[in-house]
Amino acid sequence: MSDRASINFDRIAATYEKSRGGLVRGGAYARAVAAHLAPGTVLEIGVGTASIALPLVEAGHPVVGVDLSRKMLELAFERLGPRVAIGDVMALPIATGSVMNVVAVWVFQLVGSVDDTLREARRVLRPGGRLVVIPSRARHDPDDIDAVAVDFQTAIRGTRQDDPEVLIARGGEAGLSLVGRLETETQHFDESPAQIIRQIEARGYGILLDLGDDDWQRVVVPALDALRSLPDQDRARRRSTRNDVLVFAAV
Image (tube, rainbow, N blue to C red; front, side, top):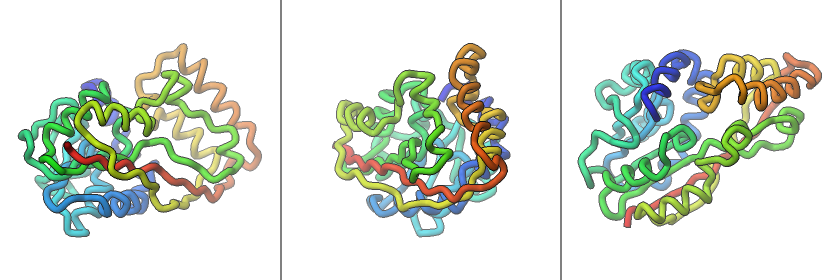
């Protein structure tokens, strides 16, 4: 992420975790990650508020984390203490070949360069170490919200830079071999159209933080109109989602 992205994430740090399921969802992701870790240190890049790192630590894994957002790290520090530090995922302040595991959950959609981030992950990994990635795009069980939902990444950029196929191909070029492709457990949560509208209007999604007015009008305004067209705006729907889990080995 760029310094500009860091500033914006500082602005939404207080509400970021709540909007993404907090420790409940973080714990589910941690379980999905933990099953594929090699023995040894775990580096979480883009550690955020440590909602995934904390459950991993509680499960006995030695975790350290880096993030560019100082506000995010303040919350992470409350949970993990001096296990976290400011760091750019494209230029990690970590010695070459010093960790056995790198974890990236909902990170690659935000980075300035997927290639640079993958190369850095490979650089800090020991041979045979693991990179475990959970991309941001979830698969929802059909509901009326999903029927009108817009994939902002694709609509704005024309593609998703954290698409699993992109990460698999680029990972291979960086010296990371795919050894597993699975899914997280199904997660259930309640969400109403009005809640999603408020989240979008507050630019609570990373892709929207620096979005210009033209793209906002072209992509976001029609998406908001579609959400407002749904009945029972304040009625929470029971939603169910799953994410990919990509496991790479350092070769």
